[in-house]
Length: 275
Image (tube, rainbow, N blue to C red; front, top):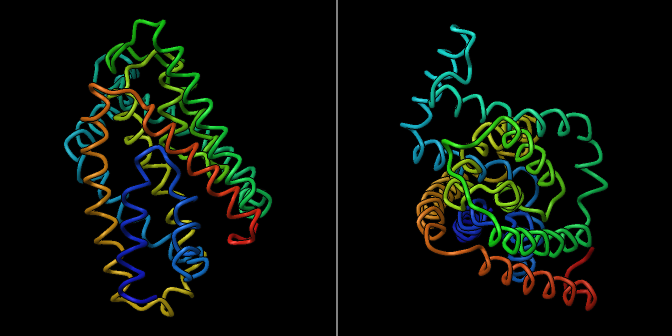
């Protein structure tokens, strides 16, 4: 991996991991357009740590507060007694479904679901679901984090499982499900990003361990560059999306997904991308 490739791939990962447009689709398309080919699982695993670090740094105070709340609820056996404890347990509850299904269907995720036609289909399908969610949100009184329930956590956690199919977008799946549940958009984004820390962290560690022998071939300088670029652009993406959703809907991302999906279909049908 060259320095140029590291910068571009780190930027693509950082900008698309948290914005609901599917980082997987972009990490497949951009290298193909530039004539680089598939960057491989090792590269994907490495640059994920840049965006993971971005989420940890951005929400560091929240994480410390929620960890304290989690153990306080555990010790007192009253996990929903106060705000911090309840929020912490909502993150735990929302993480359980993707851990269970991810382990159960690991082989299918790594083989059956990796085809580009499946990625393309999910880019468009989730766009449609996001549009339905926005239509539904117009008819609901939206709630904030303090009003979230265990049922919300379970539902959004199940929605996150959709991201096990590449092309769905983890943030797109969780934000969409939260909006369906009547959660306001900034809260949906914040909860989605908090859920990303255990989900992306766990998956990243497993993938990195599996691909550890391929890391040397990438070069340690490009690896460092990719992680740093992914961290900076990922942090900026979190900052942007939370503020953007305070006064906007997700429609701009929905329309972008439609354009991306149509472009992918065209590239697949003309042989520019190999499905």
